Amino acid sequence: MKVIVTGGAGFIGSHLVDLLLKKKYDITIIDNCSTGRLSNLSTCKNKIKFIKADIGKKGSWQKKFDNCKIVFHLAAQADIVPSVKDPNSYFNSNVVGTLNILDACLKYNVKKIIYAASSSCYGIPNIYPTDEKSPIKPEYPYALTKKLGEDLILHWCKVYNLIGISLRLFNVYGLRSRTSGTYGAVFGVFLAQKLNNKPYTVVGDGKQKRDFVFVTDVAEAFYRASRYKKTSIFNVGSGKPKSINQLIKLLRGKKIMIPKRPGEPKLTFANINKITKELNWKPKISFDIGVKIILENINLWKKAPLWNPKKIKEETKDWFKYIK
Image 1 (cartoon, one colour):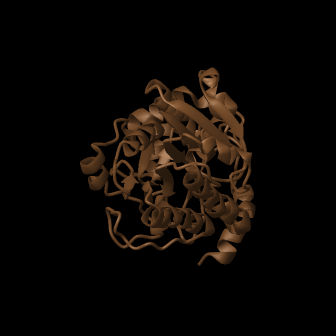
Image 2 (cartoon, rainbow, N blue to C red):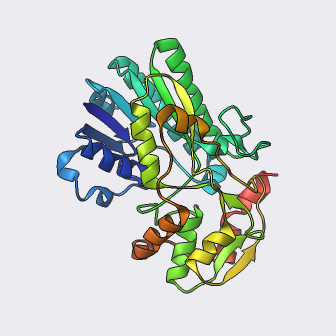
């Protein structure tokens, strides 16, 4: 079966490609390589087709959708801080890019699209664990643009007879996560600090909890969603939140506190009853094992940017300026 994976050279996308190769799919990757790395695909580059393209712009890449059966749409701009600084580029990538994907689906009669949505659409939830019917309250441009992408897909499914499955991903971690660029996810920050024997920069008191889910489990969720025959939305998390202090205990080392940030929830906690029931999916990698795997491969983060309180304060000043 011919499938397309947008963002297939990136963190989650490359793990999905690995899994789809094992399932004998005919894979075309579309990626602009802004954060993804072809080295992620070093063991399988001869078995896939790769198109370097910006989905925010219409182009010849859309012709690759001909005879495609399923699109896995993971390409997007991620991270909160740069979305506050430059919301226009996020809109172009995450909203216009998704619209361009849908245009290609309609033109070439692709019948199914699986979308990497974000649990950030829930904002600061009122209900824990948070299920798929919880209120939508995005707090920053990244969250909004990812939700708008989801809305486009679900509306196109309703009007144009597509099947669309939106996976609202919680805190995905694991090997091949981004090791360069802007201030972002906690693992990249902490691992660089550990490699350089620097204290971990902990936001607030460190008691905040996140629903961490390992990347290979997330890839499996995408695969199972591709077998589903109805348009739907699913949370993808562990259902077992862990505190930042628990993470530091596993990583070992000293910590220093930096100010709590507006718009961040004290807790992310996925209700995964729906995906467990409908897709027969549940995470296999425990948090302890996942962190162990990362520590065994920590040298992958050797080139990750090193953040300290002063640099973080400067980088996040727009966040504090605009988000209340």
